[in-house]
Amino acid sequence: MEHMDASSGGSSSPKILMESGEQPHVLAVDDNLIDRKVVEKLLKNSSCKVTTAEDGPRALEFLGLGDGQHTNLEGRVSKVNLIITDYCMPGMTGYELLKKVKESSIMKDVPVVIMSSENVPTRINKCLEEGAQMFMLKPLKQSDVKDLRSQLTNCRS
Image 1: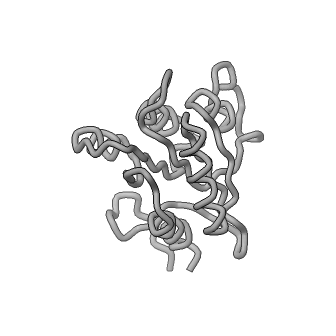
Image 2 (image 1 turned 90 degrees about the vertical axis):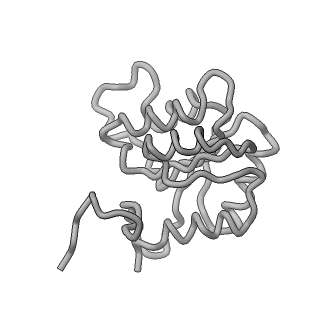
Image 3 (image 1 turned 120 degrees about the horizontal axis):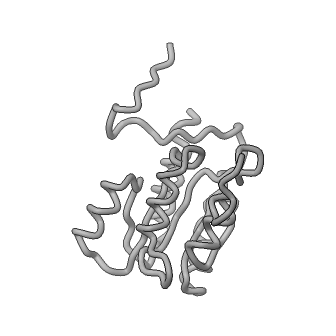
């Protein structure tokens, strides 16, 4: 019997449906090229498909949520299983990107992970309250990505 309860807390894994053997598709957003490359490499080492964006607006465009793209998106939404974004970016912070994703009826179930080099509890709490799946401190390590990867695969077993 399947149990579908959105209110159940910690133990429920994010609603990510993948064919068995399919690589999860992760959108990595960071304005810093080196950080972006590090995240991309770590994710690829954990056998993820990775798309990168250097800022919030480009990420939204890729997701089909950019300005002027609000009409009947269902058909052209990029299938992304996870979004990982830097918090501090010019123009649009990771928090603002998170809010835009969570406001979208199509994308709201996609887990968003925020990363930052600064450990600011109020910022972390604000992101988690807004619906972030996790908050990770940079620089990311392979073990961090393994945690992410296990979250992505939890729902496949």
